[in-house]
Image 1 (cartoon, rainbow, N blue to C red):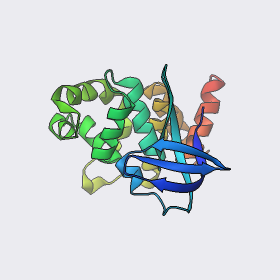
Image 2 (image 1 turned 180 degrees about the horizontal axis):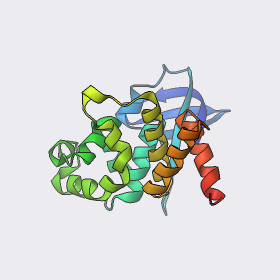
Image 3 (image 1 turned 60 degrees about the vertical axis):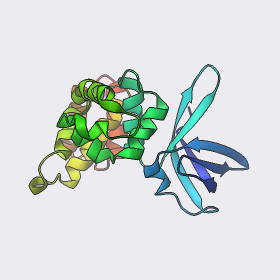
Length: 203
Protein backbone atom coordinates (compact mmCIF):
# COMPACT_ATOMS: atom_id res chain seq x y z
CA UNK A 1 0.00 0.00 0.00
CA UNK A 2 1.31 3.46 -0.94
CA UNK A 3 0.33 5.83 1.87
CA UNK A 4 2.05 9.05 0.74
CA UNK A 5 4.38 10.55 -1.87
CA UNK A 6 7.20 12.82 -0.76
CA UNK A 7 8.94 14.50 -3.70
CA UNK A 8 8.85 17.38 -6.17
CA UNK A 9 5.68 18.60 -7.85
CA UNK A 10 6.28 18.36 -11.61
CA UNK A 11 2.90 19.67 -12.79
CA UNK A 12 -0.69 19.96 -11.64
CA UNK A 13 -4.19 20.32 -13.04
CA UNK A 14 -7.41 20.73 -11.03
CA UNK A 15 -7.98 16.98 -11.37
CA UNK A 16 -4.49 15.47 -11.21
CA UNK A 17 -0.87 16.03 -10.29
CA UNK A 18 2.47 14.48 -11.18
CA UNK A 19 5.02 14.04 -8.41
CA UNK A 20 8.67 13.13 -8.99
CA UNK A 21 9.83 10.80 -6.21
CA UNK A 22 13.54 9.96 -6.62
CA UNK A 23 13.28 10.03 -10.41
CA UNK A 24 9.97 8.15 -10.65
CA UNK A 25 6.95 10.16 -11.78
CA UNK A 26 3.64 9.29 -10.07
CA UNK A 27 0.33 10.44 -11.54
CA UNK A 28 -2.16 11.18 -8.77
CA UNK A 29 -5.83 12.08 -9.14
CA UNK A 30 -6.84 14.85 -6.72
CA UNK A 31 -9.94 16.80 -5.63
CA UNK A 32 -10.20 20.56 -6.15
CA UNK A 33 -9.78 21.08 -2.41
CA UNK A 34 -6.28 19.57 -2.59
CA UNK A 35 -5.38 21.33 -5.86
CA UNK A 36 -5.89 24.68 -4.11
CA UNK A 37 -3.32 23.70 -1.47
CA UNK A 38 -0.56 22.52 -3.82
CA UNK A 39 2.71 24.48 -4.01
CA UNK A 40 4.11 25.83 -7.27
CA UNK A 41 5.59 23.37 -9.79
CA UNK A 42 9.17 22.51 -8.90
CA UNK A 43 8.56 22.81 -5.16
CA UNK A 44 8.71 19.98 -2.60
CA UNK A 45 5.38 18.40 -1.73
CA UNK A 46 3.96 15.59 0.37
CA UNK A 47 0.68 14.12 -0.85
CA UNK A 48 -1.26 11.56 1.19
CA UNK A 49 -2.48 8.78 -1.06
CA UNK A 50 -5.05 6.03 -1.48
CA UNK A 51 -4.29 3.19 -3.89
CA UNK A 52 -7.39 1.86 -5.66
CA UNK A 53 -6.86 -1.56 -7.23
CA UNK A 54 -9.01 -2.54 -10.20
CA UNK A 55 -8.78 -5.53 -12.48
CA UNK A 56 -7.34 -3.43 -15.28
CA UNK A 57 -5.36 -0.79 -13.37
CA UNK A 58 -3.90 0.47 -10.10
CA UNK A 59 -5.02 4.07 -9.64
CA UNK A 60 -3.49 6.49 -7.12
CA UNK A 61 -5.62 9.20 -5.49
CA UNK A 62 -3.98 12.04 -3.57
CA UNK A 63 -4.94 14.46 -0.81
CA UNK A 64 -3.27 17.38 0.92
CA UNK A 65 -4.91 16.65 4.29
CA UNK A 66 -5.70 13.57 6.36
CA UNK A 67 -9.31 14.73 6.77
CA UNK A 68 -9.84 14.67 2.99
CA UNK A 69 -8.37 11.17 2.66
CA UNK A 70 -10.41 9.86 5.61
CA UNK A 71 -13.64 11.16 4.08
CA UNK A 72 -12.67 9.67 0.70
CA UNK A 73 -12.14 6.28 2.38
CA UNK A 74 -15.49 6.48 4.16
CA UNK A 75 -17.32 7.22 0.93
CA UNK A 76 -15.59 4.54 -1.13
CA UNK A 77 -15.66 1.81 1.52
CA UNK A 78 -18.99 2.43 3.24
CA UNK A 79 -21.47 3.91 0.74
CA UNK A 80 -22.81 1.54 -1.89
CA UNK A 81 -22.69 2.90 -5.42
CA UNK A 82 -19.93 5.44 -4.74
CA UNK A 83 -16.58 4.84 -6.39
CA UNK A 84 -13.39 6.89 -6.33
CA UNK A 85 -14.48 9.31 -9.09
CA UNK A 86 -17.71 10.23 -7.33
CA UNK A 87 -15.90 10.47 -3.99
CA UNK A 88 -13.50 12.99 -5.58
CA UNK A 89 -16.51 14.95 -6.87
CA UNK A 90 -17.85 15.15 -3.30
CA UNK A 91 -14.54 16.50 -1.99
CA UNK A 92 -14.37 18.96 -4.90
CA UNK A 93 -17.89 20.20 -4.27
CA UNK A 94 -17.96 20.64 -0.49
CA UNK A 95 -15.51 21.08 2.39
CA UNK A 96 -15.01 18.17 4.78
CA UNK A 97 -16.58 20.05 7.71
CA UNK A 98 -19.60 21.15 5.64
CA UNK A 99 -20.07 17.60 4.37
CA UNK A 100 -20.05 16.12 7.86
CA UNK A 101 -22.48 18.77 9.11
CA UNK A 102 -24.80 18.04 6.17
CA UNK A 103 -24.78 14.31 6.93
CA UNK A 104 -25.38 14.76 10.67
CA UNK A 105 -28.24 17.19 9.96
CA UNK A 106 -29.65 14.98 7.15
CA UNK A 107 -29.36 17.92 4.74
CA UNK A 108 -29.99 15.96 1.55
CA UNK A 109 -30.67 19.16 -0.42
CA UNK A 110 -27.15 20.51 0.22
CA UNK A 111 -25.52 17.20 -0.68
CA UNK A 112 -27.61 16.81 -3.84
CA UNK A 113 -26.19 20.09 -5.18
CA UNK A 114 -22.77 18.47 -5.57
CA UNK A 115 -22.09 17.81 -9.25
CA UNK A 116 -22.84 14.22 -10.23
CA UNK A 117 -24.49 13.25 -6.95
CA UNK A 118 -28.27 13.64 -7.25
CA UNK A 119 -30.97 13.26 -4.61
CA UNK A 120 -31.03 9.45 -4.39
CA UNK A 121 -27.27 9.18 -3.90
CA UNK A 122 -27.36 12.01 -1.36
CA UNK A 123 -30.08 10.17 0.59
CA UNK A 124 -27.98 6.99 0.52
CA UNK A 125 -24.94 8.88 1.82
CA UNK A 126 -26.94 10.21 4.78
CA UNK A 127 -28.44 6.80 5.50
CA UNK A 128 -25.18 4.86 5.33
CA UNK A 129 -22.77 7.40 6.87
CA UNK A 130 -24.78 9.12 9.59
CA UNK A 131 -24.12 6.45 12.22
CA UNK A 132 -20.47 6.18 11.22
CA UNK A 133 -19.86 9.91 11.51
CA UNK A 134 -21.93 9.90 14.69
CA UNK A 135 -20.60 11.69 17.73
CA UNK A 136 -17.40 12.78 16.00
CA UNK A 137 -19.19 14.84 13.37
CA UNK A 138 -21.79 16.04 15.86
CA UNK A 139 -19.01 17.89 17.67
CA UNK A 140 -18.33 19.84 14.49
CA UNK A 141 -22.02 20.35 13.76
CA UNK A 142 -22.53 22.09 17.12
CA UNK A 143 -23.73 25.67 16.97
CA UNK A 144 -21.22 28.42 16.21
CA UNK A 145 -21.73 29.70 19.75
CA UNK A 146 -20.09 26.52 20.99
CA UNK A 147 -17.19 25.92 18.65
CA UNK A 148 -15.29 22.69 19.37
CA UNK A 149 -12.17 23.01 21.50
CA UNK A 150 -8.78 22.11 19.99
CA UNK A 151 -8.92 18.86 21.99
CA UNK A 152 -12.34 18.00 20.54
CA UNK A 153 -11.12 18.75 17.02
CA UNK A 154 -8.12 16.44 17.44
CA UNK A 155 -10.35 13.71 18.91
CA UNK A 156 -12.84 14.14 16.08
CA UNK A 157 -10.13 13.76 13.44
CA UNK A 158 -8.70 10.69 15.20
CA UNK A 159 -12.09 8.98 15.53
CA UNK A 160 -12.93 9.52 11.85
CA UNK A 161 -9.52 8.20 10.81
CA UNK A 162 -10.08 5.01 12.84
CA UNK A 163 -13.58 4.56 11.39
CA UNK A 164 -12.16 5.02 7.89
CA UNK A 165 -9.68 2.24 8.69
CA UNK A 166 -12.56 -0.10 9.50
CA UNK A 167 -13.01 0.19 13.26
CA UNK A 168 -16.43 0.55 14.86
CA UNK A 169 -17.42 4.05 15.91
CA UNK A 170 -18.11 3.08 19.51
CA UNK A 171 -14.71 1.40 19.89
CA UNK A 172 -12.84 4.27 18.21
CA UNK A 173 -14.59 6.92 20.28
CA UNK A 174 -14.07 5.03 23.55
CA UNK A 175 -10.38 4.46 22.91
CA UNK A 176 -9.68 8.07 21.88
CA UNK A 177 -11.61 9.50 24.83
CA UNK A 178 -9.78 7.26 27.33
CA UNK A 179 -6.37 8.29 25.96
CA UNK A 180 -7.26 11.98 26.09
CA UNK A 181 -8.46 11.66 29.67
CA UNK A 182 -5.17 10.00 30.63
CA UNK A 183 -3.17 12.62 28.71
CA UNK A 184 -1.41 9.92 26.69
CA UNK A 185 -1.56 11.85 23.42
CA UNK A 186 -2.58 15.26 22.13
CA UNK A 187 -2.45 15.32 18.33
CA UNK A 188 -4.83 13.33 16.14
CA UNK A 189 -1.89 11.44 14.65
CA UNK A 190 -0.63 10.38 18.09
CA UNK A 191 -4.14 9.38 19.14
CA UNK A 192 -4.58 7.19 16.06
CA UNK A 193 -1.20 5.48 16.53
CA UNK A 194 -1.84 4.69 20.20
CA UNK A 195 -5.43 3.61 19.53
CA UNK A 196 -4.27 1.17 16.85
CA UNK A 197 -1.73 -0.31 19.28
CA UNK A 198 -4.35 -0.64 22.04
CA UNK A 199 -6.91 -2.23 19.74
CA UNK A 200 -4.35 -4.63 18.27
CA UNK A 201 -3.44 -5.67 21.80
CA UNK A 202 -7.12 -6.19 22.61
CA UNK A 203 -7.21 -3.59 25.38
